[in-house]
Image (cartoon, rainbow, N blue to C red; front, side, top):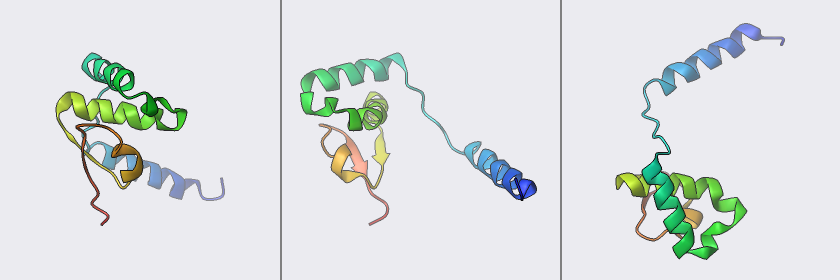
Length: 87
C-alpha cells in the first residue's frame, strides 16, 4: 500500500478501457453450443480447456471470430474462426 494513488490510477485506467470494449455474454445460445461442442468432441472436455471452450461457444453462437494467440487449444474447435494478431 506504499503507492495507493498509483494503484488507483491503474484501476481507473483499466475501468475506462473496459468501458470501450464490448464484452460478450454467455447466453443460453452459447450454453447450447457448449453442450453440443463437448458432446460431439470428447477431447475438448479436459479441465484445462473449460474456459476456452466457453469462449469458443460464445463465438460459435454469434458466428464470430476469436482473436487469440492460443492457436493450440482453439484450433481444436471445429468450425471456429480464429485469428492471431501477434504473428
